[in-house]
Image (tube, rainbow, N blue to C red; front, side, top):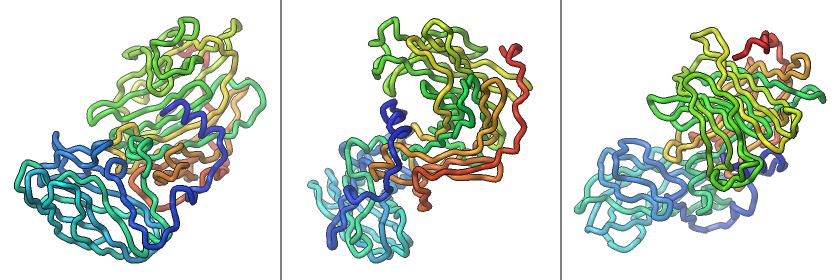
Length: 430
Protein backbone atom coordinates (compact mmCIF):
# COMPACT_ATOMS: atom_id res chain seq x y z
CA UNK A 1 0.00 0.00 0.00
CA UNK A 2 1.41 3.41 -1.01
CA UNK A 3 2.48 5.46 2.01
CA UNK A 4 0.89 8.59 0.55
CA UNK A 5 -2.39 6.72 0.04
CA UNK A 6 -2.17 5.39 3.62
CA UNK A 7 -1.75 8.87 5.10
CA UNK A 8 -4.56 10.30 3.00
CA UNK A 9 -7.17 7.75 3.94
CA UNK A 10 -6.47 8.17 7.65
CA UNK A 11 -6.90 11.94 7.62
CA UNK A 12 -9.24 12.78 4.75
CA UNK A 13 -12.94 13.00 5.50
CA UNK A 14 -15.23 10.48 3.89
CA UNK A 15 -16.34 11.57 0.45
CA UNK A 16 -19.42 10.59 -1.47
CA UNK A 17 -18.87 7.35 -3.33
CA UNK A 18 -20.60 8.73 -6.40
CA UNK A 19 -19.10 12.15 -7.16
CA UNK A 20 -20.38 13.95 -10.22
CA UNK A 21 -16.85 14.65 -11.47
CA UNK A 22 -16.20 11.07 -12.62
CA UNK A 23 -19.78 10.00 -13.39
CA UNK A 24 -21.07 12.46 -15.95
CA UNK A 25 -24.83 12.60 -16.30
CA UNK A 26 -25.08 12.62 -20.09
CA UNK A 27 -28.04 11.22 -22.00
CA UNK A 28 -27.10 9.43 -25.21
CA UNK A 29 -23.39 9.34 -24.49
CA UNK A 30 -21.27 6.34 -25.43
CA UNK A 31 -18.80 5.36 -22.72
CA UNK A 32 -15.49 3.78 -23.70
CA UNK A 33 -14.53 1.36 -20.91
CA UNK A 34 -10.79 0.63 -21.30
CA UNK A 35 -9.85 -2.99 -20.82
CA UNK A 36 -6.49 -1.78 -19.48
CA UNK A 37 -8.08 -0.85 -16.15
CA UNK A 38 -11.31 -2.85 -16.07
CA UNK A 39 -10.65 -6.33 -17.47
CA UNK A 40 -9.32 -9.62 -16.12
CA UNK A 41 -8.60 -13.08 -17.46
CA UNK A 42 -11.05 -14.97 -15.27
CA UNK A 43 -10.71 -18.51 -16.68
CA UNK A 44 -8.27 -20.59 -18.72
CA UNK A 45 -5.26 -18.34 -18.10
CA UNK A 46 -2.21 -19.21 -20.23
CA UNK A 47 1.25 -17.73 -20.25
CA UNK A 48 0.48 -15.60 -23.30
CA UNK A 49 -2.67 -13.49 -22.90
CA UNK A 50 -2.46 -10.43 -20.68
CA UNK A 51 -4.20 -7.20 -19.84
CA UNK A 52 -1.74 -4.50 -20.87
CA UNK A 53 -1.83 -1.21 -19.02
CA UNK A 54 -1.54 0.57 -22.37
CA UNK A 55 -3.11 -1.67 -25.01
CA UNK A 56 -5.82 -3.63 -23.21
CA UNK A 57 -6.23 -7.31 -24.08
CA UNK A 58 -3.24 -8.59 -26.06
CA UNK A 59 -1.75 -11.96 -27.12
CA UNK A 60 -5.13 -13.64 -26.74
CA UNK A 61 -4.74 -17.06 -28.34
CA UNK A 62 -6.40 -19.76 -26.23
CA UNK A 63 -10.02 -20.82 -26.69
CA UNK A 64 -10.08 -21.72 -22.99
CA UNK A 65 -9.49 -18.17 -21.83
CA UNK A 66 -12.41 -16.07 -20.64
CA UNK A 67 -11.83 -12.34 -20.40
CA UNK A 68 -14.24 -10.38 -18.18
CA UNK A 69 -14.82 -6.63 -18.34
CA UNK A 70 -16.58 -4.79 -15.49
CA UNK A 71 -18.41 -1.49 -15.14
CA UNK A 72 -21.13 -0.19 -12.83
CA UNK A 73 -24.46 1.06 -14.17
CA UNK A 74 -26.12 3.74 -12.06
CA UNK A 75 -29.68 2.90 -13.08
CA UNK A 76 -31.76 0.14 -14.66
CA UNK A 77 -32.57 0.00 -18.36
CA UNK A 78 -31.34 -1.14 -21.74
CA UNK A 79 -27.69 -1.05 -22.77
CA UNK A 80 -25.89 -1.57 -26.04
CA UNK A 81 -22.42 -3.12 -25.93
CA UNK A 82 -19.75 -3.10 -28.65
CA UNK A 83 -16.09 -4.00 -28.70
CA UNK A 84 -13.35 -1.82 -30.12
CA UNK A 85 -10.90 -4.33 -31.51
CA UNK A 86 -8.60 -5.32 -34.36
CA UNK A 87 -7.14 -8.52 -35.77
CA UNK A 88 -3.71 -8.19 -37.35
CA UNK A 89 -3.97 -11.46 -39.25
CA UNK A 90 -7.49 -11.38 -40.67
CA UNK A 91 -10.74 -12.69 -39.23
CA UNK A 92 -11.87 -14.00 -35.88
CA UNK A 93 -15.10 -14.75 -34.05
CA UNK A 94 -15.68 -13.82 -30.42
CA UNK A 95 -18.54 -14.79 -28.12
CA UNK A 96 -19.83 -11.92 -25.98
CA UNK A 97 -21.94 -12.77 -22.91
CA UNK A 98 -23.51 -10.36 -20.40
CA UNK A 99 -26.48 -10.70 -18.03
CA UNK A 100 -27.68 -13.84 -19.78
CA UNK A 101 -27.58 -12.34 -23.29
CA UNK A 102 -25.13 -13.72 -25.85
CA UNK A 103 -23.88 -12.75 -29.26
CA UNK A 104 -21.14 -13.81 -31.67
CA UNK A 105 -19.24 -10.89 -33.18
CA UNK A 106 -16.67 -10.76 -35.96
CA UNK A 107 -13.36 -8.94 -35.84
CA UNK A 108 -12.21 -8.48 -39.44
CA UNK A 109 -10.14 -5.32 -39.58
CA UNK A 110 -6.45 -4.74 -39.00
CA UNK A 111 -7.40 -1.27 -37.73
CA UNK A 112 -9.30 -0.64 -34.51
CA UNK A 113 -13.01 -0.71 -35.31
CA UNK A 114 -16.36 -1.42 -33.66
CA UNK A 115 -18.01 -4.83 -33.65
CA UNK A 116 -21.72 -5.56 -34.03
CA UNK A 117 -23.77 -4.65 -30.92
CA UNK A 118 -25.17 -6.78 -28.12
CA UNK A 119 -28.25 -5.47 -26.31
CA UNK A 120 -28.75 -6.28 -22.64
CA UNK A 121 -31.30 -5.35 -19.98
CA UNK A 122 -29.93 -4.08 -16.64
CA UNK A 123 -32.55 -4.91 -13.99
CA UNK A 124 -31.09 -2.77 -11.20
CA UNK A 125 -28.11 -0.48 -10.57
CA UNK A 126 -24.85 -2.30 -9.99
CA UNK A 127 -21.82 -3.87 -11.58
CA UNK A 128 -22.16 -5.56 -14.96
CA UNK A 129 -19.79 -8.34 -16.04
CA UNK A 130 -19.19 -8.80 -19.77
CA UNK A 131 -17.44 -12.04 -20.75
CA UNK A 132 -15.43 -12.53 -23.94
CA UNK A 133 -14.43 -15.93 -25.33
CA UNK A 134 -12.54 -16.63 -28.53
CA UNK A 135 -14.25 -19.05 -30.91
CA UNK A 136 -12.15 -19.05 -34.09
CA UNK A 137 -9.23 -17.17 -35.63
CA UNK A 138 -7.25 -17.06 -38.83
CA UNK A 139 -4.04 -15.92 -37.17
CA UNK A 140 -2.28 -16.62 -33.91
CA UNK A 141 -4.49 -14.32 -31.82
CA UNK A 142 -8.22 -13.72 -31.63
CA UNK A 143 -7.97 -9.96 -31.34
CA UNK A 144 -6.46 -7.01 -29.57
CA UNK A 145 -9.42 -5.51 -27.69
CA UNK A 146 -8.87 -2.01 -26.34
CA UNK A 147 -12.31 -0.87 -25.18
CA UNK A 148 -15.86 -1.92 -24.41
CA UNK A 149 -18.27 0.70 -25.80
CA UNK A 150 -21.42 1.14 -23.69
CA UNK A 151 -24.50 3.27 -24.41
CA UNK A 152 -28.21 3.31 -23.71
CA UNK A 153 -30.81 4.10 -21.08
CA UNK A 154 -28.95 2.47 -18.17
CA UNK A 155 -25.96 4.70 -18.99
CA UNK A 156 -27.98 7.95 -18.99
CA UNK A 157 -26.93 8.73 -15.42
CA UNK A 158 -23.35 7.74 -16.07
CA UNK A 159 -21.24 4.65 -15.59
CA UNK A 160 -18.62 3.96 -12.96
CA UNK A 161 -15.37 2.39 -14.19
CA UNK A 162 -11.65 3.08 -14.14
CA UNK A 163 -11.27 5.98 -16.57
CA UNK A 164 -7.92 7.39 -15.40
CA UNK A 165 -4.71 5.69 -16.67
CA UNK A 166 -3.00 6.68 -13.42
CA UNK A 167 -5.39 4.32 -11.63
CA UNK A 168 -5.45 1.33 -14.01
CA UNK A 169 -2.97 -0.67 -11.91
CA UNK A 170 -4.72 0.22 -8.64
CA UNK A 171 -8.19 -0.38 -10.06
CA UNK A 172 -7.26 -3.87 -11.18
CA UNK A 173 -5.98 -4.53 -7.65
CA UNK A 174 -9.28 -3.22 -6.29
CA UNK A 175 -9.97 -0.68 -3.55
CA UNK A 176 -8.53 -1.17 -0.09
CA UNK A 177 -10.64 -0.64 3.03
CA UNK A 178 -9.74 -0.01 6.64
CA UNK A 179 -11.07 -0.15 10.18
CA UNK A 180 -9.85 2.72 12.35
CA UNK A 181 -10.30 1.72 15.97
CA UNK A 182 -11.32 4.17 18.67
CA UNK A 183 -8.65 3.83 21.37
CA UNK A 184 -10.41 3.90 24.79
CA UNK A 185 -7.71 5.79 26.67
CA UNK A 186 -5.74 9.02 26.58
CA UNK A 187 -2.80 7.36 28.28
CA UNK A 188 0.40 6.12 26.66
CA UNK A 189 -0.46 2.89 24.81
CA UNK A 190 2.43 0.46 24.54
CA UNK A 191 0.64 -2.67 23.25
CA UNK A 192 -2.02 -3.45 20.64
CA UNK A 193 -3.77 -6.84 20.62
CA UNK A 194 -6.03 -8.19 17.87
CA UNK A 195 -7.50 -11.51 16.70
CA UNK A 196 -8.00 -12.24 13.01
CA UNK A 197 -10.00 -14.90 11.19
CA UNK A 198 -10.07 -15.32 7.42
CA UNK A 199 -13.27 -17.27 6.58
CA UNK A 200 -13.07 -20.41 4.50
CA UNK A 201 -12.76 -19.58 0.80
CA UNK A 202 -11.77 -15.95 1.37
CA UNK A 203 -8.00 -16.56 1.36
CA UNK A 204 -7.38 -15.61 -2.28
CA UNK A 205 -3.83 -15.31 -3.58
CA UNK A 206 -2.72 -11.69 -3.38
CA UNK A 207 -4.62 -10.89 -0.18
CA UNK A 208 -3.08 -9.02 2.73
CA UNK A 209 -5.06 -9.16 5.98
CA UNK A 210 -3.48 -6.47 8.16
CA UNK A 211 -4.22 -6.86 11.86
CA UNK A 212 -2.21 -4.36 13.90
CA UNK A 213 -1.63 -1.14 12.02
CA UNK A 214 -0.01 1.87 13.69
CA UNK A 215 1.21 5.30 12.67
CA UNK A 216 4.59 4.03 11.50
CA UNK A 217 3.90 0.57 10.05
CA UNK A 218 1.77 -2.55 9.79
CA UNK A 219 1.62 -6.19 10.88
CA UNK A 220 -0.53 -8.98 9.40
CA UNK A 221 -0.75 -12.08 7.22
CA UNK A 222 -0.80 -12.52 3.46
CA UNK A 223 -1.30 -15.10 0.70
CA UNK A 224 1.71 -14.98 -1.61
CA UNK A 225 0.92 -18.00 -3.80
CA UNK A 226 -0.95 -21.28 -3.74
CA UNK A 227 1.92 -22.78 -1.76
CA UNK A 228 3.29 -19.85 0.25
CA UNK A 229 1.84 -17.64 2.99
CA UNK A 230 3.58 -15.14 5.23
CA UNK A 231 3.42 -13.22 8.48
CA UNK A 232 4.56 -9.72 7.54
CA UNK A 233 5.77 -6.88 9.79
CA UNK A 234 7.09 -3.59 8.41
CA UNK A 235 8.10 -0.20 9.79
CA UNK A 236 8.44 2.90 7.61
CA UNK A 237 11.52 5.07 7.74
CA UNK A 238 10.96 8.71 8.82
CA UNK A 239 12.68 9.64 5.52
CA UNK A 240 9.95 9.74 2.87
CA UNK A 241 11.05 7.95 -0.28
CA UNK A 242 10.18 4.92 -2.42
CA UNK A 243 13.87 4.06 -2.81
CA UNK A 244 15.36 2.46 0.33
CA UNK A 245 18.89 3.08 -0.99
CA UNK A 246 18.35 6.83 -0.75
CA UNK A 247 17.61 6.79 2.99
CA UNK A 248 20.34 8.53 5.00
CA UNK A 249 22.04 6.24 7.49
CA UNK A 250 20.73 8.22 10.45
CA UNK A 251 17.13 7.69 9.28
CA UNK A 252 17.30 3.99 8.44
CA UNK A 253 15.23 1.43 10.32
CA UNK A 254 17.50 -0.81 12.40
CA UNK A 255 16.76 -4.46 13.15
CA UNK A 256 17.11 -5.20 16.86
CA UNK A 257 16.16 -8.87 16.75
CA UNK A 258 14.16 -11.36 14.74
CA UNK A 259 12.54 -14.71 15.39
CA UNK A 260 13.24 -18.14 14.00
CA UNK A 261 12.77 -18.60 10.26
CA UNK A 262 12.22 -14.85 9.87
CA UNK A 263 13.66 -13.01 6.86
CA UNK A 264 14.51 -9.33 7.25
CA UNK A 265 15.55 -6.53 4.95
CA UNK A 266 14.41 -3.29 3.37
CA UNK A 267 11.38 -2.53 1.25
CA UNK A 268 10.55 0.23 -1.21
CA UNK A 269 8.02 1.41 -3.80
CA UNK A 270 5.36 1.99 -1.13
CA UNK A 271 7.36 4.24 1.09
CA UNK A 272 10.54 2.62 2.41
CA UNK A 273 11.77 1.10 5.60
CA UNK A 274 12.47 -2.14 7.40
CA UNK A 275 10.57 -5.30 6.60
CA UNK A 276 10.41 -8.77 8.11
CA UNK A 277 8.43 -11.85 7.26
CA UNK A 278 8.11 -15.47 8.24
CA UNK A 279 6.81 -18.08 5.85
CA UNK A 280 4.00 -19.81 7.70
CA UNK A 281 1.07 -21.59 6.06
CA UNK A 282 -1.71 -20.18 8.18
CA UNK A 283 -5.19 -21.60 7.54
CA UNK A 284 -8.54 -20.10 6.66
CA UNK A 285 -11.13 -20.63 9.38
CA UNK A 286 -8.56 -20.46 12.19
CA UNK A 287 -8.37 -17.45 14.53
CA UNK A 288 -4.87 -16.00 14.95
CA UNK A 289 -3.59 -13.65 17.64
CA UNK A 290 -1.37 -10.61 17.05
CA UNK A 291 0.54 -8.53 19.61
CA UNK A 292 2.45 -5.34 18.88
CA UNK A 293 4.60 -3.21 21.19
CA UNK A 294 5.75 0.36 20.62
CA UNK A 295 7.69 2.43 23.14
CA UNK A 296 10.25 5.26 23.05
CA UNK A 297 13.79 4.19 23.95
CA UNK A 298 14.49 7.44 25.84
CA UNK A 299 17.10 8.52 23.27
CA UNK A 300 14.85 10.04 20.61
CA UNK A 301 13.92 6.76 18.91
CA UNK A 302 11.04 4.29 19.20
CA UNK A 303 11.28 0.49 19.32
CA UNK A 304 8.56 -1.64 17.72
CA UNK A 305 8.19 -5.38 18.28
CA UNK A 306 5.68 -7.82 16.78
CA UNK A 307 4.64 -11.25 18.12
CA UNK A 308 2.42 -13.86 16.49
CA UNK A 309 0.80 -16.70 18.43
CA UNK A 310 1.44 -20.05 16.71
CA UNK A 311 -1.50 -22.34 17.64
CA UNK A 312 0.44 -25.53 16.90
CA UNK A 313 3.13 -24.48 19.38
CA UNK A 314 0.76 -22.91 21.93
CA UNK A 315 3.27 -20.07 22.18
CA UNK A 316 4.00 -16.51 21.14
CA UNK A 317 6.72 -16.21 18.49
CA UNK A 318 8.60 -12.98 17.92
CA UNK A 319 8.62 -11.87 14.30
CA UNK A 320 10.99 -8.92 14.64
CA UNK A 321 11.92 -5.85 16.61
CA UNK A 322 12.91 -2.61 14.84
CA UNK A 323 14.28 0.72 16.05
CA UNK A 324 12.84 3.74 14.25
CA UNK A 325 15.15 6.74 14.56
CA UNK A 326 14.07 10.35 15.06
CA UNK A 327 10.80 9.11 16.58
CA UNK A 328 9.53 9.60 20.12
CA UNK A 329 6.06 8.11 20.45
CA UNK A 330 3.96 5.36 21.93
CA UNK A 331 1.51 3.50 19.70
CA UNK A 332 -0.90 5.70 17.76
CA UNK A 333 -3.67 5.21 15.15
CA UNK A 334 -4.67 1.57 15.81
CA UNK A 335 -6.22 0.22 12.62
CA UNK A 336 -6.66 -2.84 10.40
CA UNK A 337 -6.98 -3.05 6.65
CA UNK A 338 -7.70 -5.40 3.75
CA UNK A 339 -6.00 -5.16 0.38
CA UNK A 340 -5.18 -7.18 -2.71
CA UNK A 341 -1.62 -6.72 -4.00
CA UNK A 342 -2.01 -8.77 -7.22
CA UNK A 343 -3.70 -6.91 -10.13
CA UNK A 344 -4.59 -10.17 -11.88
CA UNK A 345 -6.58 -11.27 -8.79
CA UNK A 346 -8.63 -8.12 -8.42
CA UNK A 347 -11.84 -9.64 -9.80
CA UNK A 348 -11.95 -12.07 -6.86
CA UNK A 349 -13.63 -11.18 -3.57
CA UNK A 350 -12.06 -11.57 -0.14
CA UNK A 351 -13.20 -11.03 3.42
CA UNK A 352 -11.62 -10.93 6.87
CA UNK A 353 -13.00 -10.77 10.42
CA UNK A 354 -11.40 -8.97 13.37
CA UNK A 355 -12.31 -9.51 17.02
CA UNK A 356 -11.37 -8.89 20.64
CA UNK A 357 -9.22 -5.78 20.20
CA UNK A 358 -7.41 -4.45 23.28
CA UNK A 359 -4.88 -1.74 24.06
CA UNK A 360 -2.54 -1.57 27.05
CA UNK A 361 -1.69 1.67 28.88
CA UNK A 362 -0.69 0.04 32.17
CA UNK A 363 -3.78 -2.14 32.06
CA UNK A 364 -5.74 -3.77 29.27
CA UNK A 365 -8.69 -1.77 27.89
CA UNK A 366 -11.20 -3.08 25.38
CA UNK A 367 -11.82 -1.44 22.00
CA UNK A 368 -15.56 -0.86 21.49
CA UNK A 369 -15.76 1.19 18.27
CA UNK A 370 -14.31 1.45 14.78
CA UNK A 371 -14.91 3.53 11.66
CA UNK A 372 -14.61 2.65 7.97
CA UNK A 373 -12.24 4.38 5.57
CA UNK A 374 -11.23 3.64 1.98
CA UNK A 375 -8.32 4.38 -0.32
CA UNK A 376 -7.90 6.78 -3.25
CA UNK A 377 -9.11 4.22 -5.79
CA UNK A 378 -12.51 4.20 -4.11
CA UNK A 379 -12.60 7.92 -3.39
CA UNK A 380 -11.80 8.72 -7.03
CA UNK A 381 -14.77 6.51 -8.08
CA UNK A 382 -12.56 4.22 -10.10
CA UNK A 383 -14.02 1.24 -8.26
CA UNK A 384 -16.19 0.97 -5.13
CA UNK A 385 -16.44 -2.72 -4.19
CA UNK A 386 -15.12 -2.35 -0.64
CA UNK A 387 -16.99 -2.24 2.65
CA UNK A 388 -16.94 -3.04 6.36
CA UNK A 389 -19.31 -3.76 9.20
CA UNK A 390 -20.07 -5.73 12.35
CA UNK A 391 -20.17 -9.48 12.95
CA UNK A 392 -21.41 -11.33 16.05
CA UNK A 393 -17.82 -11.35 17.31
CA UNK A 394 -16.47 -8.00 16.14
CA UNK A 395 -15.89 -6.39 12.76
CA UNK A 396 -15.30 -7.38 9.15
CA UNK A 397 -13.84 -5.96 5.96
CA UNK A 398 -14.63 -7.08 2.43
CA UNK A 399 -13.30 -6.07 -0.99
CA UNK A 400 -13.06 -7.26 -4.58
CA UNK A 401 -15.49 -9.35 -6.58
CA UNK A 402 -17.51 -6.36 -7.87
CA UNK A 403 -20.31 -6.71 -5.33
CA UNK A 404 -23.03 -4.05 -5.18
CA UNK A 405 -23.65 -3.44 -1.49
CA UNK A 406 -22.41 -0.04 -0.32
CA UNK A 407 -21.44 1.03 3.19
CA UNK A 408 -20.66 4.73 3.28
CA UNK A 409 -17.02 5.51 4.07
CA UNK A 410 -16.81 7.20 7.43
CA UNK A 411 -19.50 4.95 8.92
CA UNK A 412 -18.95 4.15 12.60
CA UNK A 413 -19.47 0.69 14.04
CA UNK A 414 -20.05 0.16 17.75
CA UNK A 415 -19.44 -3.28 19.21
CA UNK A 416 -19.56 -4.26 22.88
CA UNK A 417 -16.38 -6.25 23.36
CA UNK A 418 -17.21 -8.98 25.88
CA UNK A 419 -14.06 -10.94 25.14
CA UNK A 420 -11.42 -11.74 27.71
CA UNK A 421 -8.42 -9.48 28.10
CA UNK A 422 -5.15 -11.09 26.97
CA UNK A 423 -3.20 -12.94 29.64
CA UNK A 424 0.36 -12.27 28.62
CA UNK A 425 3.47 -12.24 30.77
CA UNK A 426 5.41 -9.51 28.96
CA UNK A 427 8.67 -10.48 30.66
CA UNK A 428 8.48 -14.01 29.20
CA UNK A 429 7.86 -12.97 25.61
CA UNK A 430 10.67 -14.05 23.27
